Length: 191
Image (cartoon, rainbow, N blue to C red):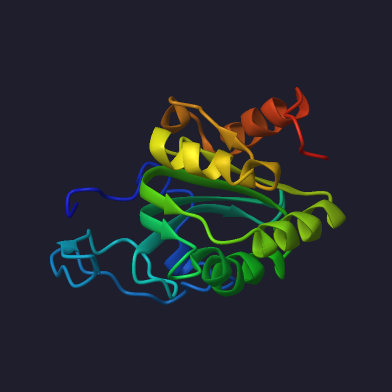
């Protein structure tokens, strides 16, 4: 797992540690000191912690003018034991929402497992976003995690999309592509 780095091709456009509005502003990263783990496996030091012991993230883009952000997740998304959605919402997403962000793209291809607990924070987040004219989606969640996510019917609140070539897009174009996919009609998601 230590070789899984956050996507880095947009670093010339955005760095969360240089963004004064980001909760990760001022963080200093070591390329060589591996101290964070998911269970017994060290992860690359560029991933950011936000209060979960098993899930890490990297904000790849936050555009305050266009009101969207893209973040990448790594690890185990465990709402049952860790209440990861609450931690993510309170410690990261709400901080960006306070700055006007209302469109969220969560990239989940490095989420190894998902464990369901409840819908409260998903419902709350969706209501807050809809009130602001926004939305949130999760891109490329693994097949097993997607299955559990859908069985819990969480995709009503956080739709799952697959866009294998997301890395070939520039941030704004990815945002517009996701917006187009959403406007073409996903069941149970009111825009």
